[in-house]
Image 1 (cartoon, one colour):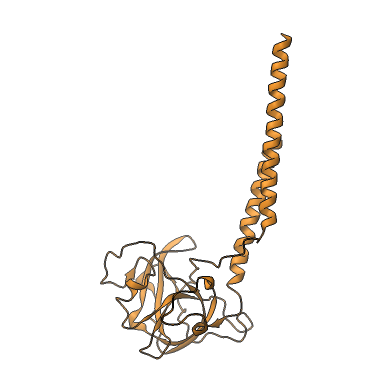
Image 2: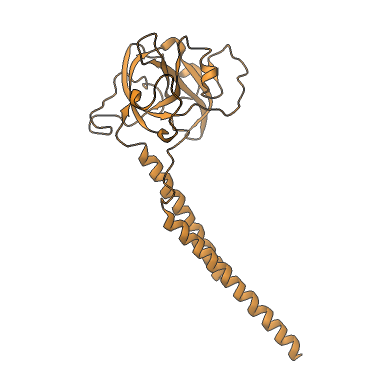
Length: 239
């Protein structure tokens, strides 16, 4: 009985540890946004510590280069990310791939936005899952891989992509930034593939409690085993 209780309490503390770390990772995506160009340049590698960093994106939509990323889930349904580049450094300058949102079918996606835009998005590193694009000539990709996207975009791309933040409004975060023509109308919010890395000591107490409960359970199990063993030997000797 004690072993079962200790095991259950250990699992409870482990779940609490995981939940606290996940919550902190989400909180890290709600810090004050930085200007995109202050975080990454058009020819720079992705800054590893900036996963999920909110950035202010300003530029011009490149609607003719809209792409769809397959195999993306939303509320348990399989569908597509809708991704349109934003030219940051002038209409012909380097562009950032921007995930505007999610749709269940490519045919149901609204038209791509045009003109100037400004919004807050969450920065993500390009993907490299190894998925193969079976038809490089269509506008559907199996992953957000820059080499694949470059076949559809007639300009350089930043070494990252961004997901439009879904909580940008007056009175909400980020303070002082209101989305302008963010291209999300008619789309469901896309979720992040990668969250920021949290500190190693985050919720460490819960993890240590879990280990303590499991050690206690093992000790209790050992004591019970020794008692049964000793009693069995004693009864055998008495017989």
